[in-house]
Picture (cartoon, rainbow, N blue to C red):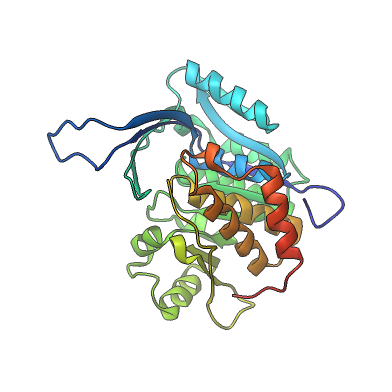
Amino acid sequence: MSTSSSPPTVVVVGSTMIDLTAYASRIPRSGETLVGERFQMGFGGKGANQAVMARLLDANVVMVNCLGDDAYGDMTLDNFATFGIDTTHVHRVPGASGVAPIWVEPDGSNRIIIIPGANHELTAAQAARSVRQTPEAAVVAGQLEIPQEVTAAAFAAARDAGAITILNPAPAAPLSNDILKLSDWLIPNEVEFEMLAGVPPDSDDALTGFASETATRLVVTLGDEGAALVSPELDRVTRIRSPRVDPVDTTGAGDAFVGAFMVGLASGLDERDAVRLGNACAADSVTRPGTQSSFPPPERNAQFLAEIQGSPSNA
C-alpha cells in the first residue's frame, strides 16, 4: 500500500500489554462491587498496537520491546508472528510481562491502568542497536510506556540514519529535553495535550504556541472531531475532520491513528493526507470492541488509502 514501489519499513520502540477488558453499565464507585456484562482478553500496549496497525497497512514492521518469561510473553510473540511483525529485537527477561486492566462503559469511553512489568527492562543500548540494525527504516516511533531515555536513544540512532521520529506522549508525563529535541513529531490526544501544555487544544494559539515551544511538528487527536495539525510549512492550524461513526469502544483508537499516520508519512503521503488516513483508521476501529482486534483489516485499509490518493487534501 505504499505510494512507492515497495512497502515502507517502520520501527516501533515501545510497549506490549495483555489487555484485560471488562464491559459494564457504569464504573463502580469506591468500595463497590459491580456485576459486569462481559470480559475480553486481548493484545495491547501502545507500541504493539501501533505496530499492528502499521502492519495492517502493509508496512514492514520491526518491533523493539522486552517481554517477561511468562505465558503472556509467549502469547505476545505468537500474536506478532500472526501479523508477520519482525520480532528479532524483542528481548526476554525473567518476570512478568505488561498487563492493562481496562473498564469500558456503554458509550465506548474507557479507563485504563497499565502495569509495565518487563517493558521497563528494555535498555537504551538495545533500543539504539535495534534502530542501527534497521537502516532501511523510514520512521521510528515511540511512546511513554517505556522509559524516556530508552526512546531517546532509539531516536538518536534514527536521526543519524535520516529516519523520521514520531513520539506519542502517552500516557502523558513531563518530557525530557533529550526526547523533545530528538522528536520530529508529537502526537498527543486532547487530554494529553492539556496535561503537557497546561491549556486545552481549543484555540489555534494554544496549538501553535506549544508547537513553537517544543520545536516539533504537532498533531493533536480530538476524538470524534478528528485531529488538528501544526507544522512549519503551514501558517495556520489545519483541523481535519474524522468520518462520523457510532462508537462501540474507543480503546486503541489513538494507537490506530498513530500507526496509520506513521505509515502514511513513510509511504510518501503529505502530512494532511497522513492525518486523513489516521482519522479513517481510528474512526473505523471504534465501531468494534477490543483493541488490536478492532483495527480495520487490510482490505478496508486499502480502500481508505485509495480514497485518499484519489481525492484532493482538504480539511
